[in-house]
Image (cartoon, rainbow, N blue to C red; front, side, top):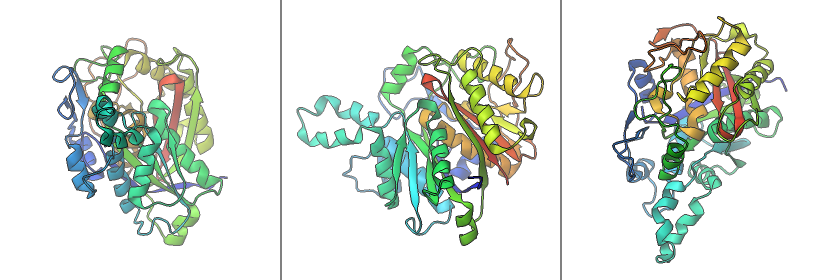
Length: 399
């Protein structure tokens, strides 16, 4: 049960890049992807900014070399691109050569297709093929089918902690000898449903999000997909695989406080971080950098900051930043893309900046890293907290 979980591949597409290299260049140069909405129709276009991927569904289909007559959703298309890069990055030529699974996550599912065809299903029966694409599990099956994967496929939807829980589930399947290799992560596209929903909750900013700033107004939604390839130590040794990083710890907890808000004392976040540290066997002093959830909502950043102080102690919180000012909040994909960013931080000895920060929060003495900073990083703690109080923490390590 104590075997390490190796990460041998990773893939990503987000508003700051269509692959790992492009994302890294944007993080290095401070190039964010928050912009006006162009890729779908909404009354909020020109008013609300998002982290939008500027590729149409048709362009994604062409990029993936799919049949044009398909019922694949945007969520699935983004997931296919990221999963394909992850598999290629891991040097996998025969995906079914060992016990391999896919644990994907999403919150939006096929909502973009449902919105497009909902009112025409009755009058145009040929459109009814798109109904099957609505549910969350359909995107996982579509990704598995594209990869040619014959093994276990499962879907997780726990709001904004979804990809972290997919990564955790993959690790447990390997640790318990169920699978040898698991492709894990998340994918979510933008849709009118999520945009209108978050707008109704009044947690969207009217400008650019400002994580951990005293004057933060709310988040920018984003779309993205990211996947990692997890492998057992035995597989790594057998195939002499290059290891990008290790998943050394993980934790999940639920404070059961509110449907959408985090508890005032950050109990869920505290318990998730505490559990991740315990599983990793690391001391809190070993954490070199925290990729915070940092949504720039008044509630999250206050709750998360309190939880970090509870874990690490006053004036002892490690250097931290939120990368959501680059990408927006990508919901179920967030923990996946931030796991990729955490690995890039370790590989390149860099802390990526918390953009748009100006004023320290008055409730505590915490200041994020606001400029690109060189630092030797051996262990990164990455937080992802979802609606319903579902809080998850990952710890990624160099060795």
